[in-house]
Length: 292
Image (spheres, rainbow, N blue to C red):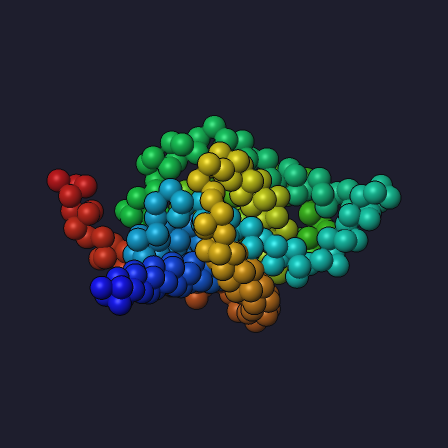
């Protein structure tokens, strides 16, 4: 009788172990997706919404998980640009003009999305965190990339250090569109900067730097609001996703900088169209019900 009880107990333990392993695999996959897509103009939020849905990892805890792993991605940028950020920090303390202008530009660019998000994020989540809006944002975002890349405008801003406060404000206004899932924060800021006369390289780097205050603020704000959903039992899951996002984002940032040195963003536009169409096909039943 005791042997039979031990067998069933062992079976329960094995089932629990496999379930935990499955959750960790999901966390690993989502972390990789977050890291790869966060700084590319293809919308990390849109990918995580779909991936979370497919993996059945889209409950309230899953949503907080997606927020936390963003911190891993942004720390990868901080590490990649650690020397520059250290010099800026020292320059601010020493009241260096260039460092103060750089920080001021980031704050100016950060404010529009912060204000709009603070007052309208509930409305945005209610109406735009849906398969149809995500798919359409992917496709419309692709058309914007095609349009911006086809414009023959001579870039007057060759470096991030050449940006004025008015240039930063324009990029900040462009970033507000990224509050709509599927738009892409990186895509909105990079295309916005290029549209207003910034070189492709400078636009991409400014997008990276602008992500630091934007994502830190969004992450800590959402964690503060949902702290009651954080449990020690989920620590391993969050740690795996965090580490995966950090590593994948680190390599994605470096790869993107190398890529844009020789190429345009057109390939990402084609990817957005294909992915958007796949979403429309995948969710066709839900979309059909929405229109009937």
